[in-house]
Length: 277
View 1 (cartoon, rainbow, N blue to C red):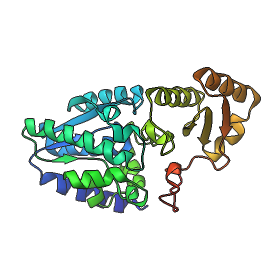
View 2: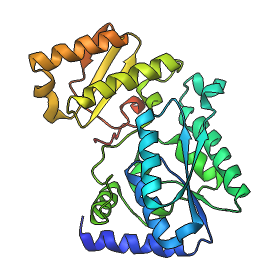
View 3: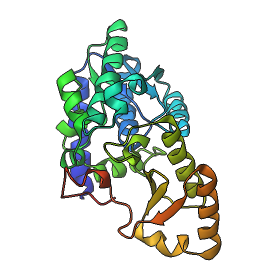
View 4: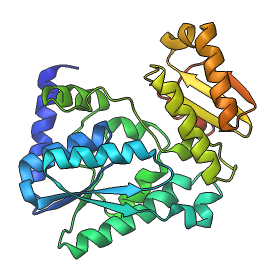
């Protein structure tokens, strides 16, 4: 990607943000929403606020990181207690799970924004998100949530490049998705399963694996890693440590997926043109 093109896209984003009187940003602390919040704050100053979900489907360390980032930007930050685990349709884990979750979250964000006199809410979707199965994006559109980075034509590569240029600490942060995406559709989502996934991924990440997903198939943990890490995890000492740790967490069988990490791998039935992370 040519840097000049990325800069031009950023200028489009800035020009769009200048048209807003104020803005509430749905802020996860990931690569995309951090870039959006940083640019929005540069443009709108005190007229932008950030809102983050406190939810069991998101690792606690991610929420804590979002709090630290918002504080470093000097942005007013509100943490919202999420409601998806109280919703039967979400817990049933049907293919519209993400739609249900986002609908609930955006309702709460919109209500809080309106209480502050803020009419617009934005989320950090980028152009690449349009290529995967994203029911949450549909919910955002229906709720009137704006996606200024999509409108500006920004891709994930653009956002990482520009984030690095802006010295944002998230520029090379691995992509994250909610923990519910580790559980196959049709398998009910439980707090125990979410906690097992979180603990397993945390353990493996702490061993130095930058990209890791632990797919929860009952008592089977299916580990997805970058291809470059295959040899590392098969090191006898590391392999034994992973097996021991994941068994303590509650998995009986531990497998490494030979295809490696594939973004949206649980969406195979919905999208054959999978994005590779």
